[in-house]
Image (cartoon, rainbow, N blue to C red):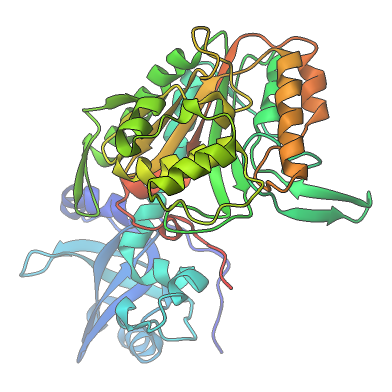
Length: 466
């Protein structure tokens, strides 16, 4: 009967053995390691196999002389590819120079009752990669590397924010008024309180309440949920970093966010020049463009010249621009956004700072002092994707109420992406919020670009499947 062990004492991880191989071999040190059997070659009275732990793999050699006849026969007749084993031994190099452990003791800690795919390409249904992500991780070391780098990115973000005086906080996922972005929320029901709630689309209004409370530099890393279409760069459940700094404006945050992105890419990839899906992206070279000028140059439409969505839609159609399905109740802001995403954003491949958005796009942002039709805002665009978005926050409680009431009317008229009216947030603003600027960064998109993944499902461990 197979024994299932509850522990195994390792002296080293495989990576430590590889890094310190020469010293350990010279000292004839006995090392203990554990991992999953991935390759096996039986050759009479000896056997070569490879084990892989959480990150690295190494070759193992076992024979009768090292294990004894009884243990050797027991192992060679029962051990299979996929089994998790623990072993101890000394190090040597084979005649071909390969780093190898000469096994002195070996036990099967947990057997694999199902055979692993011989090659990952043998999985005929690509969805199996996502449904059975554990198989993907076992067989494909490149996939494990992606998620190791994702973890590294999160650690580095926390490190940089902490060194700049930010503290990490948590805000609710269940919300009565899912404000903070133009998006359609998911709806759920809280049985104990007998109330309908929404999954948050953004933590913004709760984080700003903490700014009102005197927590001057804060950030949150967490899940947001938006019940809208999905493609290679959009998921309904995604991870965001959002931070706020009192007494900063959007120009301060442009510098901070840009330097943060560059630092992450350099430390994870070792270079600021990345190859992404066949395109070279150079984070040493950034361009800065104005939103109004960009759209005007790309399609000839001055978006600030239109006050009503119906008039803008006529101009869009007159120019033969297909912006997709347009609801009759669409707001002017959402229509401008559709136009920009059609004619301009896909062209912004190299790192770009996009500045000074039309005010109707961001009801939570501060108006520009020189032109109230614009807000003090920016986005970081790479590969046609929005990596980050930030702005100087609107602290005028009366103006904020007016703008959110307009959004609420648009939602009542049928614009499902218009913002909700958040009374708790508005009440907090009436107590006074200091000058503040906030930024959100999409962790999934940043990880995809750093790890050269085309689709966000490839940087999510368990993407939602039908």
